[in-house]
Image (tube, rainbow, N blue to C red):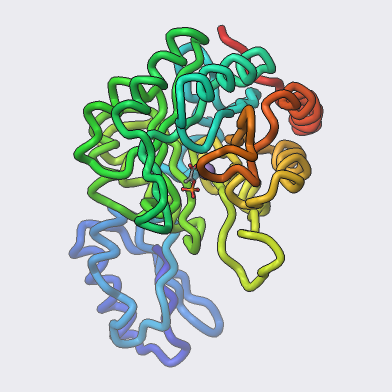
Length: 342
Ligand code: PEP
Ligand code: MN
C-alpha cells in the first residue's frame, strides 16, 4: 500500500501515519518529495487495509499495490499460467478448447446426435444445461435430473467430458456425479454462498461474467472459489449490457487480453449468448480466438428451428465442422492449437 500525504501534511501527521503502520506489524518506507511525502507500507495487506489510513489526518489517498483478488491475480506468480486438465483435455496455455453442445438438454436423440457431431469435429467438451436460468418463470426450466442422466449417457458414448450449469447449491450432489466442469451462469456470478460451495467441491468451474460486472468483480467472484482450495477456475466472457440495442449483448473482447494480463486463469469466450444471433457467432468466435482466448463455449443444435431455447443463436450441427476449421485457423494466429485428448 502506498499512502500519499497531502502537500500540507505536517511532520507530526507523517510520523503518526508511520507509527500506525508500524503498530500494525508492517514496515513504513517514507519518501519525501518536493511536493508531497509518500509512505510505502510493506506487510500483511489485510492488516494495512484495516488501518483505514484514507481518512487519517494529513493523508490524501492510499493506493493498494496488490490486487484484492490475490489468488486469481497474476501478480505473485512470476508469469506462470494455470492450465486446467479435464479428463485428459488441457485448457489454457497453448491449448485452445472448444466446448460445444445445445443450450439445453431436450431429448436423448437431440443430445446424443449433437454430441457425436461436435466430438467428430474436434470439440473437447460437451455443454448442455439440465437446470436453466430463464428470464421467465413460465419458460422451460430444463429437464433436471433426467437431463443429467442423458448427459451421463452422452459422456459414456462419446467420451466427451460434460459442462453443465449449477444454479442451486441443493443440486450440487447430483451435478457432481455428472459434471466434469460446473458452469456458473452470468446471473449467479455474485451468488457468493454458491461459489464457496463449488469451491469446496474442488470441481473445475466455468465462471461466467455477470451482465453488468466489471472485470474486478469477476475476479473477486473467482476468488471465492479459489479461496476454498479449488484452483481450477475458467473465466468466461459472455457479453455485457451496454447502451447498444442493435444486438443482444456487447461481447467485450477487450476483456480477453486484459483478463490475461490481470490473471493467470484461462479465459473462455461465449459468442452465442452475447450475440443471440447465429450469423454473428462465427465472426465473434474468430475474433475471440485471434484475441488470445483459451477456448470458446458455443451452442450447437441439430435442428435449431425446433430448439426449445436459444435456437436463433445455435449453430447448425451439420455445419459445425466448417466452423471448427475456421476457428482453428484464428486460434493459430494467437499461437494456440486445438486441444486434443492426451
Ligand atoms: C448458458 O450458457 O446456458 C447460459 C444461460 O448462459 P449465461 O449464464 O451466460 O446467460
Ligand atoms: Mn443458451
